[in-house]
Amino acid sequence: MIRVGSLLSLFCLALAAAPAAAAMVGASVFDRCKVCHTVAAGAPSTVGPNLHGVFGRKAGSLAGFAYSPAMKHSSIVWNDDTLPKFLRDPQKFIPGNRMGFPGISDERQLAGLLTYLKQVTQ
Ligand code: HEC
Image 1 (cartoon, helix red, strand yellow):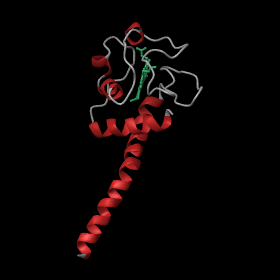
Image 2 (image 1 turned 90 degrees about the horizontal axis):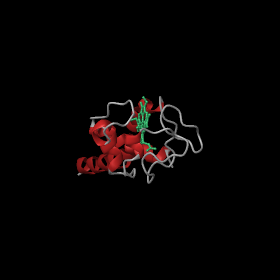
Image 3 (image 1 turned 180 degrees about the vertical axis):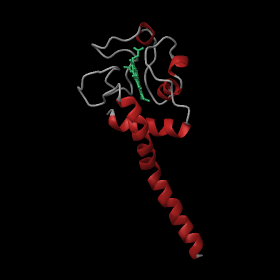
């Protein structure tokens, strides 16, 4: 019985830690994005557009950033469905866009990145 009990508490611990662990994975993946993107509200865009408030934003719509025609004219809205598709393979999802990033094929890294992005872009 003690065994079952400790297994159960281990299981609960793992469940509680999962979102935090995902965000930690995401933070390290985001190091690769930071080279080109800022996330703070009102921060200037650098190589890529500032990503503050990106969830719910129409692709290519941040005022003052010179997007590619491909990004500007896509009718995509960034959300839990479209962001992973784009970040898995940017050129496949929006052919001709100018984001110089090959994509993330590791699903765990991608999920972690999404969790992290949601936290830091709000
Ligand atoms: C080498 C620079 C570079 C890197 C690295 C990079 N990006 Fe980008 N990103 C860009 C550029 C440039 C654009 C605009 C592309 C266009 O206009 O076609 C862009 C566009 C985007 C957009 C669309 C934003 C909008 O306003 O529509 C998102 C979302 C995004 N990047 C997320 C990321 C994430 C997350 C990472 C890391 C996994 C990343 N990017 C890595 C340069 C980069």
